[in-house]
Structure formats: C-alpha cells, structure tokens
Image (tube, rainbow, N blue to C red):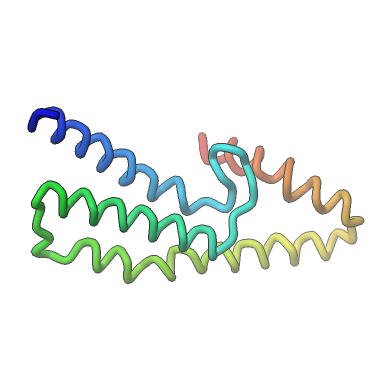
Length: 121
C-alpha cells in the first residue's frame, strides 16, 4: 500500500475512534439500544485510547501535551456517571411500584427510545 493510502486509512481510523469516544459514553448502545454499564463504558473508552495510541505510533505522531494520558485519566470519571444514572432510574422505578416485567420493558425498550429521541433534539 502506498504512503498516501496508508495516511488516508490512518485518518479514517482516527476519525472513527474519535467519534467513537462520544458513542461509548451514553447509557444505551447506539447500535442495538442495549443498556450499558460503567464497566462496559470503561472498556470501550480504553479500546478507543488503545486504537488512538496505535495510530499515533504507526504514523510517528508525537504527543507532547500528553493528550492520551489526560484522556485515560478521565476514563473512570466518564464511566462512573453511568452507575449514578442507573441508580437514579432504579430509584424512580421503585417509587412507581411496577412489576419486574414492566420495569424491564421500561428500561430495556421505552427508555432507550426516549433517550435517543431527546438526544436528537
């Protein structure tokens, strides 16, 4: 593969992973609307950091401002908000006294749809 083609592939990979960071953080998967946990968000963000690190190494890009180190230092904070979000959802549902099947429908079907509709606005 010629040099220009390699650069273009690296740029595409960089843009995909950069955008992917914002797709890792919401409480629901953008692809299949499954519920995310703090651990799954942490793993996804770390995967993105590893990909960005690999791209930088392959392209000989230096990181004099330690951007990747700073990003990695924020991963726990970015993922922990999800645990609090789900606790908040559970507390609200406890106040409604709904049966487990309805609770599953609310959190697994209705809430993802409402969440993504609100995010679109």
